[in-house]
Image (cartoon, rainbow, N blue to C red; front, side, top):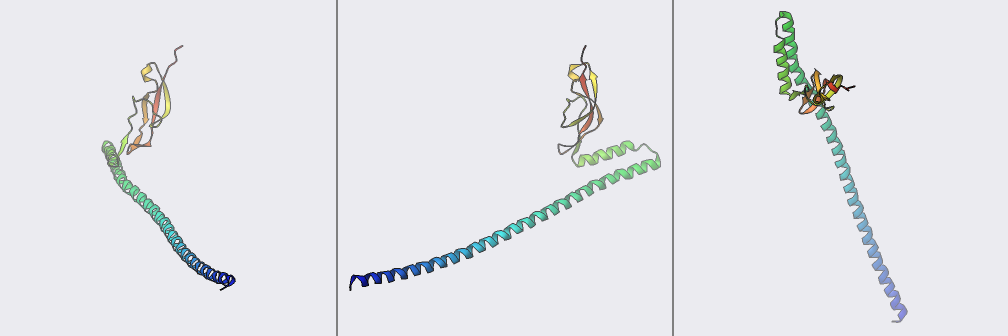
Length: 171
């Protein structure tokens, strides 16, 4: 066999090998694309499920808040009933009604903010008035609680409206 024939044979063998490699690469590419499409579809389903779950959670939270408010309002209707009875009968039931209201607040972990005699704290108190004081110890201290403040689970529900002592400037 002459050298030219050997070279042609080698080229044919090489071409056939390249065709096989190309065919295998195309099959691999097709498999990768299929796998990619499956992963993409799965991710899109998971994303849609997550969005739907978030929407359901928001609806549940709204429903919970509505019904939580309803239970508190039902308890306060007891006070309304007691006030109506007290007005009809003209008796001194106001202390009893006040006690009833405080019990309801206590059941819902609502507590009063102690203000009078305490150092003014803008996170807990709202300064409505100021009063000049002679004693340095009363400077920036709550002199009078004008409207009670309330905490809900140790968080300010409504700040106390207070009169704050301000040290009188001596001339």
